[in-house]
Length: 270
Ligand SMILES: NC(=O)c1ccc[n+]([C@@H]2O[C@H](COP(=O)([O-])OP(=O)(O)OC[C@H]3O[C@@H](n4cnc5c(N)ncnc54)[C@H](OP(=O)(O)O)[C@@H]3O)[C@@H](O)[C@H]2O)c1
Image (cartoon, rainbow, N blue to C red):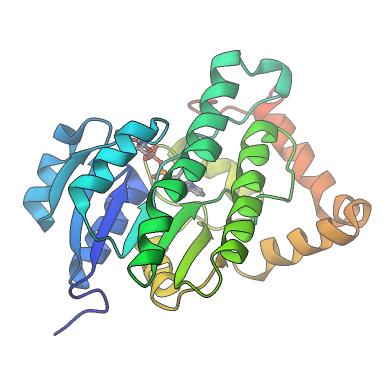
């Protein structure tokens, strides 16, 4: 059986992560030739033995490291940026290191990856670059996610601008917001998502949705059904109404877990 990505070269940056590993397995099943990248590629040996693929070191906050990955890969059809960092706490509780790491990993990383790969994809007739968002489209501005939300909204707007800049070249940036998923990093927050009424899905389900979006060359995909999409749009047009209908209720729940006087507990507050 031939897969949708037969003969395509796909790089997964952050293949060591919960979602990155699921993306790699899903692309492998569909016939892609994989380059599995992480800051420590030795962490990917078992995955490469299971599904095949070459290993490469990559730090997405370092443009020289990304350029070396690009040189090693040669022609690339799809780059999936499966990295990220997502603290959930009051702004006052964020350390300088957390703010810097969130903005550098999420926003600057997405910009550097795109700058590294989009020009050569354009010269070779096209390709897809995927960046991951957070809950909803990144512009819903949930309290206690302030720095993370700033980085995701930045990625969303950056992706829109790049798609306009590269229109007609065959290059697409996909902004993909996964549903809360069953990964190690997200597991401590599952009770919070359930209390907010958001289902937690398997990493395989997220991967299936991502591959569908890549193969259809979509530019934006918000998982989680109609609710996060509708509220993102409502928030953009009538923010006070969005607060009355939903965000104020979310705020009470989020404050109980992530506020400075939190009464509920999660295993790790990021
Ligand atoms: N899981 C969910 O429910 C969910 C839902 C919505 C959005 N997301 C977002 O999706 C992304 C992945 O989530 P996940 O649950 O798979 O997280 P994860 O398991 O913690 O994976 C994150 C990956 O990012 C890599 N990474 C971090 N900094 C890096 C850097 N400077 N250079 C290269 N790689 C770097 C890590 O690799 P090394 O540390 O090994 O280098 C790790 O493999 C995150 O942005 C997360 O916020 C997740």
